Length: 346
Image (cartoon, rainbow, N blue to C red; front, side, top):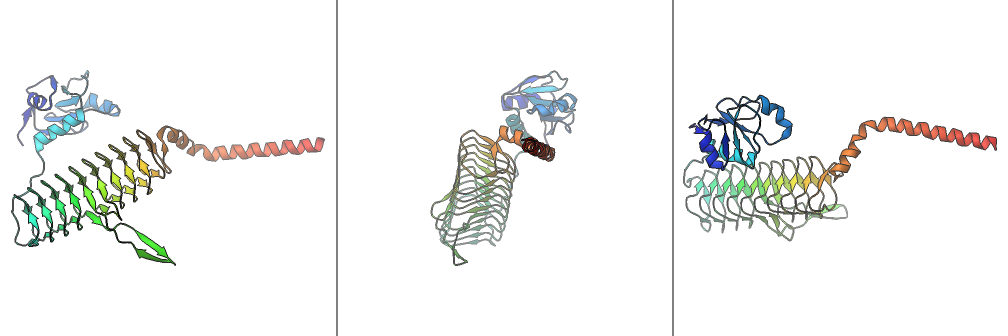
């Protein structure tokens, strides 16, 4: 790996150097593990003790610190760190193989320029694929699917019929887009399957993690908005609308007909009941159970999920509940004895 000077990296991210601008940086690391030729970053105050003891050659910060280590001062340290990691390492490169003769491409499918199609890929009738797409082995593109430019589908990713995929979409391995929604009509104890006639629409710059299931809509489309990032093993129910730039951490489950606003963050294993509306800029803590509408800008935790401040106060009492129960019973006995004595005296 070819190193870059701290001064070059500062120019790259629009920051300024405090310290040795000629220091050569060859890799990146965390505060506690970075060495003299590494760069790291500091953006969370709980890591301040590590900032004072780090062996890193340079640290990216928002505000200059009283430490001996060279510093790169920028407005957003984590974003700058991302840019520097890309500059030092680059993104994964994909081998140029063209279209493998072992791929199965329908005669009526349309494939754009400079696509890399690996063995055992299937592209079905009337599918349309844009330019510069990469499909790894086992990818299945269903009939009538439309895919934009610069998309990347890892092994065994599946897109069912008639779905719409935007530009620069990434599907990690073993993810399914457009599977049938979980829709059944129960009549006299028998569950009858409801045809799912909607589609899935993934807008530009969406990334879906490994092992996810994105259900097609029953009637309306399921939509994942521009720039949204979905973690591994997430399920999105039929007809749900995920707003732009949302982050859904692994193992989230969102039921059908839910609407999420923009820039929402759902922590790991959050469960969302169907047919509710979650506003913009909402943060939901890990393992929360969301059972009702959530207004814009809320931070909620717990199951059932409640406002975070109330939740902290409520959950802090859980450890004290056994003693509180004993105290209440003691008071109840005392009151009963007092009432009994009062009756006797009368």
